[in-house]
Amino acid sequence: MKVLLLKDAKEDDCGQDPYIRELGLYGLEATLIPVLSFEFLSLPSFSEKLSHPEDYGGLIFTSPRAVEAAQLCLEKNNKTEVWERSLKEKWNAKSVYVVGNATASLVSKIGLDTEGETCGNAEKLAEYICSRIAMESVTVYQTIPHPGIQGNLNSYYSQQGVPASITFFSPSGLTYSLKHIQELSGDNIDQIKTQGPRHLKQNCLQLELLRKDCTDAATMFAAIGPTTAHALAAQGLPVSCTAESPTPQALATGIRKALQPHGCC
Image (cartoon, rainbow, N blue to C red; front, side, top):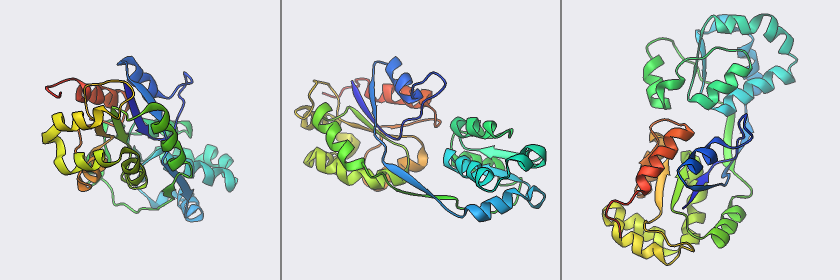
């Protein structure tokens, strides 16, 4: 069964994207299509703040991109030596919070110890830390549409057909990809949007003719976390699966359960 993940590929130590591997363990054939690109912002300001750990109670890295911004600051401003000599130790004397295991792994590579990665999502992490420190935010990147999103989606639908499941990894990813997905799926996505999850059997019948490989379920919409799930709901789209944590294992488990037959068709 084919599933579509709207994210860029990230190889782990085994040389494979962990989401593809975990979904494959459940017999799901996953394809990754990137829908976002990133532009780094405010790096001089961020670099200055990294140089003065005495002014802050800790660090919060909200995504892997935020860690990449820190790495750029260290490299571009020739701060690697001073980081290793003193700054790293000073920051490690404070709390360094992260959202998710992927971000924690990258933070560890710049020598910092992390906490909070097991909270599961940004909302739970915020509850965990909001009473501990006063916070100052620095926006270090912004998202823009990936230049190949339309062509990659066109190629996928023409070659693979309509997927059994589509997973969105961010509200902005949903914003940039939904129009193209609606165009490629025709009226079927609009009908699902209008009818919602109470009409799974009818949705299934409507999408069945579009599938190249016969399956017994309509396209399911999945979200990597509650914020993305809320964005899907705001578009009127039924959310069949929200990962309990932003990990390949949690998403694979959720998608498998959502795709299991429970009366549809």
